[in-house]
Amino acid sequence: GQQVMQIPQYQHVQEGEDFTTYCNSSTTLSNIQWYKQRPGGHPVFLIQLVKSGEVKKQKRLTFQFGEAKKNSSLHITATQTTDVGTYFCAGHSGGSNYKLTFGKGTLLTVNP
Amino acid sequence: GAVVSQHPSWVICKSGTSVKIECRSLDFQATTMFWYRQFPKQSLMLMATSNEGSKATYEQGVEKDKFLINHASLTLSTLTVTSAHPEDSSFYICSARDLPRLLAGGLLGEETQYFGPGTRLLVL
Image 1 (cartoon, rainbow over the protein chains, first blue to last red):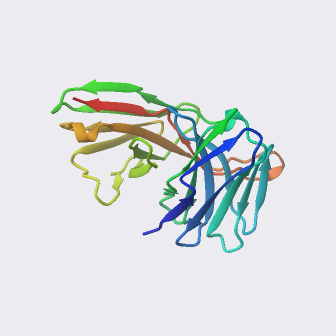
Image 2 (tube, rainbow over the protein chains, first blue to last red):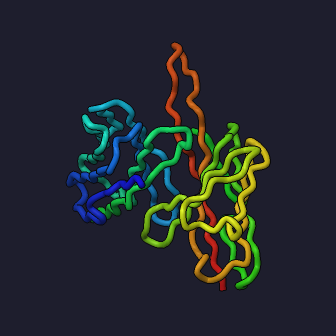
């Protein structure tokens, strides 16, 4: 079945440093979505990427979807303590089941 | 964004009892809802896809007789953990699929899943 690999598993940075997490799917995706889960909370939708090579920005967050629609990245510029949490990518392979396959997530901690 | 509620937010029960968890889409109709399970420090694992008016589709390895899913209306899906045991203790999260909405200018919005706040189940 479809697998979505996400690295790194953990990332600890000093406040102000940049952060990147990467996702790679075993199959071509219809779209990829990114979620943030704060400690003790539930996943919150951040963004969806659909087009090959797509790049979207949300303030300090930059999301990219690879040309082959198999990989994606989330980059945070100048991290803040409010960025702490686990970032998950979730791939949708298309079809009528609308299922998402989640990566294992990257736990980001930020030292003030 | 769309709101999904889940009830209860946490439950402690004795081994052998059954626990029902409700998932509601509050401001949109969801023909499809999903149930996930998340163990500490792990990712979300899809358990089943719940379709309104039809039987749920379970992922491989998930016992359908143990995890009963009912999606009786467009805004409510329930997950019942029958004869719960300590190994069923986990964080259960539902999500509801929101169809793309027509935006101003004729553009189609994004289709996404909105997650409920989750239910923490502890079986003693």
